[in-house]
Every structure is written in structure tokens, then in C-alpha cells.
Amino acid sequence: MEQVFAKTKERMEKCLDSLDRDYQTVRAGRANPKVLNNVVVDYYGSPTPLNQMAAVSSPEPRLLVVQPWDASMIKEIEKAINMSDIGINPQNDGKVIRLTFPQLTEEHRKNLVKDVSKRGEEAKVAIRNIRRDSMDDIKKLKKDNEITEDDQKDGEKELQKITDSYIKQIDDMIKAKEDEVLSI
Image (cartoon, rainbow, N blue to C red; front, side, top):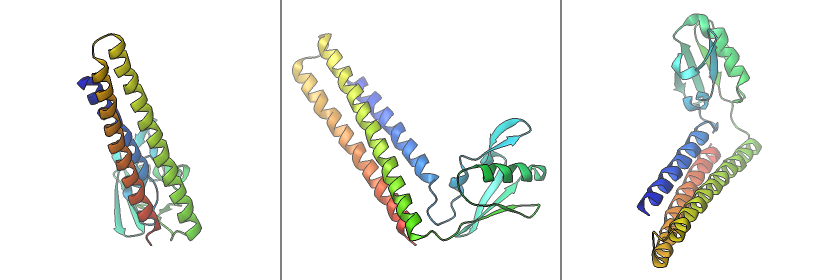
């Protein structure tokens, strides 16, 4: 039964990591280089993540500067940023690309909070699905007479404790991201 718990925790950790990566791409008023993590540039025919072909820095709270290592790729990088869904127009001066983050409106902040909550709820559903799969594994162990009925009940209680702790972590992540979005 310990293998079931280990597998459950591993899958739930992956779910938390996925939510964390998802939240890093949410633009919260401040310039965060991680919003460019999903931008992929066509580098001589092969799709390459932007962070592997340029230095991204944030010299000011609302400005990102993208400095390509290969200056000939600046047009391709600009095109990839335009095609991404971050919603900011890049300004190209021939050497670097500047991304100026506008001040978020109250309405846009509220929409972002809704999006953050929705993504968090999706992660909770994923956690509950993992719990269901693990409960099925425990029931299968009981059916195969590998564990007793008492062991099954104890295992189900332990799974619920594990699930509750991960749901609480997700709630904390949602709250922290909502606070970040709403702070001016």
C-alpha cells in the first residue's frame, strides 16, 4: 500500500508543479521574465524556446528587455512574441527588444483573478481524480486479498489526508496569485 501512497504523492506533486508553471505565465502588472517561458522561436527551422536563445532581464518594474545572443534572429524573436498570447507589442531597436507592460485596469485584474481561480479549480479536480485512481488501487488490493478490510479503511483515510494537504496547497497558491494580481 506504501507504493500506492508514493505514486499518489508523486502525481499530485506534478499537478502542483504544473499549476505553478501555469501561474508564472499570468501577467500580474509587474514585468516577469517567466511570462516569456512559453514563447517558441523558429531558429533556422527548429522550434527553440526564447530563453535558450536570448537573455531576458527586467531593468524596471514594468519593462522586459530581450537581448538575443544571435543578433540576426531579432526579427524572428519579435515575430514569435507577437504571435504569443501575452498581449504586448515588442519594440525593436535593432539590438534588443523591449516589452513595456501597461498598468492593468481594474476590470482586467478582475478577469485575471477569475482565470487564476479557474486554473486552481482545474488543478483541484486533477488532484481529486488522482485520489479516485488511488482509491481504486486500494480496492483492487483488497479484492485480490493482499490487504484486510481494516487496512483498506486506513488506506482510504490516509489518501484523504494526502488529498486534503494538496488541496490546501492549491488554495494557498490561488490566494497568493490573486493577491499578486490585485496588488497595484
